[in-house]
Amino acid sequence: MKKHPLPPFTKETAQQKIQMAEDAWNGKDPEKVSLAYSIDTEWRNRNQFINGRKQVQDFLTDKWENELDYKLKKELWAFSDNKIAVRFEYEYQNKKGQWYRAYGNENWEFDEDGLMCKRYASINDLEIKESERKL
Image (cartoon, rainbow, N blue to C red; front, top):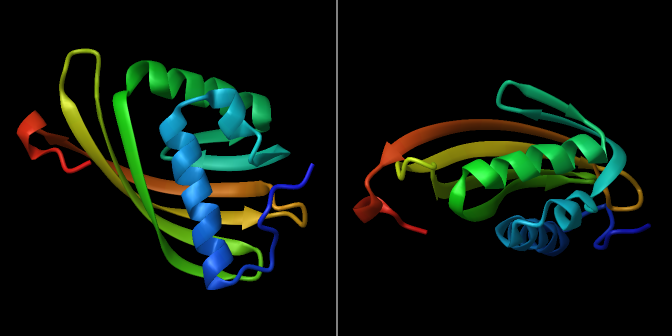
């Protein structure tokens, strides 16, 4: 399976890849989102290490069951050949109704088929009031 656009990336194709990821994550469908990743994808997400598409699906299922009203925005930081660096922020509320804004950076590496084989994310959460929401 190929997931276009394929590396090597240009600024335009890197931005297209980022927009596709943003749209997919905002759709909150773990199975659909996981198809952008290689079968043996490697992730670091905060303090979690996730390996393989099945673990990605499990992680995302749990995430969106606990991070309610999730809304994400990503932007290009840098790119080269088969790598893209992204800055992002997202907002959500927990099951108790407390709102958060999460900020972070992701480093992505893609295989020749355009599937993400590595994703390293550093993320910080900030409690916010509902009136402080931006997204």
